[in-house]
Length: 444
Image (tube, rainbow, N blue to C red; front, side, top):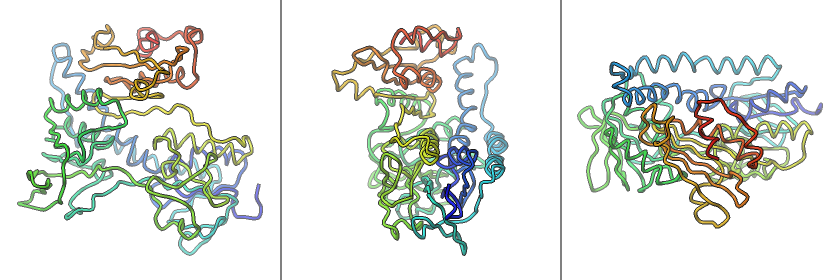
């Protein structure tokens, strides 16, 4: 451990790219500092995964009740104000809880904006702090359209703190956030219009399954405008108007700019030190090291080629703990990382995609209509399809599902993909029955 510097490791940012690794490193006796300019915990607990799912669970419940309306008496609806209050009750205490855990391990928590001075030093306000190693984990932030009237639009942070659901919501974008928040707003009773830059949504997922989700949203009243060329936003008659070039004006009460997320790389000293980065994030090698000695990057701000998801950040942060503590000198070896879009129904996948498999003779794809399964019939699921991808030795190497429980299914079969289990090993796994996991494993 270094005695030449103030700290062994200093992290810039206090999200999952930091604390999942900083905590075990401190437990090993290393002297750690964490600098955070905003809320401790970063995007995921405060303005991302945790906050979103707190608002989404009632959406799932109302959709299930609608399908079972002749079995469950009454008609459920979402009380948005109470839904938001419940989200705050669950989420608002997380920064203090994480801060308490960090500080209980004698990790120095520094509040302020950090800037790199050299490859061992950062400045925060008028103070400087040195460290043997520095990890940049500044994450991503919402991208904002640069159009006339852009100040009239809101981002995902704003939406996740809406006290009242507007009557009409216009969502710009067709990625994770756009589709998830369109789903939530629609279920909460808003009229929703989605303005798409191109003609495809959720490009990273199988488009046949995406089309099913879009068709379901359209049946619920969501309007999709493809290839929308947006000129700008203007205020008219106390109503914000989103202008689509040449074709029409979309009158609305609320504009959500969900056009993606961009790395937080500005004004932190990267240019001064010559650290390489681009629009995808900070360039790192297979040890998560930048091109400048002693400086690393972790989490969403790092350009590793992996999905920019919370599980990725956790894995990277824990890898750096092993690297810094001398437990490994090996390059990072990413496992199969699953992803899911929390629409209703959900789409989830892991490993080799359907498109990749269908364009290669190395794989076979086995697809099943799960609506015919007795277990799905209980809740009257109308959309439920699953595709398994196998290699030539019949190892399960990929899976994609669209259904109400797609996230649970993909999570359940993940060990088979990640550990490349063979049929004998899979046969040794006995699951609870009846359960969605048992149903998923029986078909491998």
